[in-house]
Image (cartoon, rainbow, N blue to C red; front, side, top):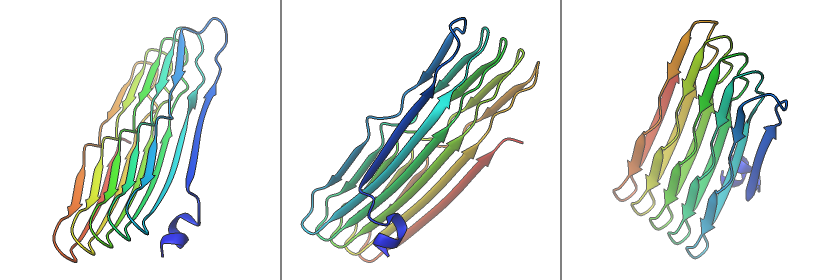
Length: 194
């Protein structure tokens, strides 16, 4: 089951920043700074992290962060699998687009425990005088008890503010934990802004 979820990918980090024209004010795409550790005996940790942003024209600002995610398998025979995707960018004219995501923690600490975390944050595309803020991220998922399982799926979707529009979708800051012996905790969170 472990290998089916992540099919042997131990670490895949991608941070792509599409450069903006010289007259653009700002386009920042961070990503990176991720930690993937399998410290327990016979433990396994798989982490995938993708951050994509950029595209600024005129006076626009496009900041897409992502990154700084932690995936830890510290219990004996434990498994921690984490997949984090952050997409954003494209601010035209006087628009702004901020997309954060990232800063997520996934930990399998108990003996034989399993922790699965999937976080997707998508936002951006502000043009004219629009603002688009999409946060998400800062989620925590932990399997602390012996033979416990914790699964967390968090999706935050926002973006696309019109000429004079404002579009904000927060989400994130979610916590999920399986603490007792053989306990199971499952959390699914969707935050969307039409």
